[in-house]
Length: 446
Ligand SMILES: Cc1cc2nc3c(=O)[nH]c(=O)nc-3n(C[C@H](O)[C@H](O)[C@H](O)COP(=O)(O)OP(=O)(O)OC[C@H]3O[C@@H](n4cnc5c(N)ncnc54)[C@H](O)[C@@H]3O)c2cc1C
Image (cartoon, rainbow, N blue to C red; front, side):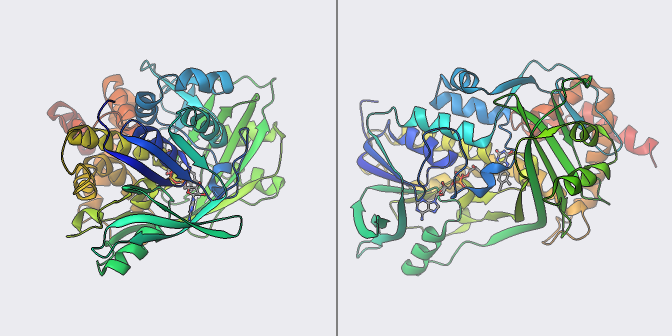
């Protein structure tokens, strides 16, 4: 990039969202500083600032595609580091109430399976190869700094017990919680964005296992989706070091125990015995780690009439999703794709960063709509907190019938798989031919 948009940008947080944003900004700013509160390991291992990294993380196909735009060698590097390739919808068995299991069909694309620490380590290594990116661990950002005309011009952070200040033309908040963005709005007298919540109160437990080599399996991964009445589900995915991640989850106060016998007994209550059977013969490689996730949450930044210049929240700060759908990293990557388009349009402008956040908030609504709509399916659980969409009952009826159609019809199954991987818009499922088949299915089941 010959035309730069500024001399210095700062990214708060070195999660997947922060790292990929830094990589993007390194093409537009002379220097990019990433400040991360954690010590960062020099290999793929969990860290304190992201306790959820011990839970299974799936990178959807659309997320991989977006990340490949930033890191063309990513797929190769992940495989070299131990990621396991599985053919989507063939190797990964999906069990859904009423369709236990889905037909295994080849739609021509793979899912790369690995732990989140491996993905983050590889992305971090590739990011810090950029000469103009300076990643500083053990630096906790405490406050954003405002000029007299309420522009964000820098921040304060703590490093080794000392408070330090640093200035930049653009500060990206990829801290996940976004407290500093909200506090900065308070300081500017701008109301905080409204929040939509889907209160799922989901509890996860994940352990690493070695699966029995004697068992004959027709799969290299399992997704067991919960029924509305039970809320219990789980995943099994291969990962690096010939290990498997097994995640079990329950909703609204129910969750898998941390002790191994209790964990296995939890899987035994599922509709099918696929995960239980695998677990029962598996060798544990460590303890079970639990994680509680209260709600999917969408902050309506796009509805604000003002936003401080020089600040841009991204990733989970804007919208976080029930992890069971595996969407968060992909949505963060897609938001970065939108940011790339906006920055490209500004190259050569006299005030390139003016109004950037507002344009960004508007432009990412297309990215958020589909995954949010999928997350809304959590309202099928009676105890889910929040405002159910008015047409929820019809939507569930349609999607139940759509799944039965897709189980029989490979073309619809392919499209549904692409929608679930955020590669295709769900509006394509409203194709008249598909709607006709779904309507016939609904009529047949009444
Ligand atoms: C249990 C669970 C399972 C999930 N599974 C999936 C999955 O299967 N697929 C998927 O795509 N997504 C999944 N997600 C979501 C995914 O982790 C996030 O959406 C994604 O990583 C984007 O997050 P982020 O970069 O915005 O924030 P994070 O990855 O949370 O990173 C935020 C970073 O900011 C740092 N930080 C915070 N405050 C400060 C500060 N003051 N100063 C400096 N640094 C700071 C943190 O230490 C951290 O490194 C899951 C989430 C959870 C909770």
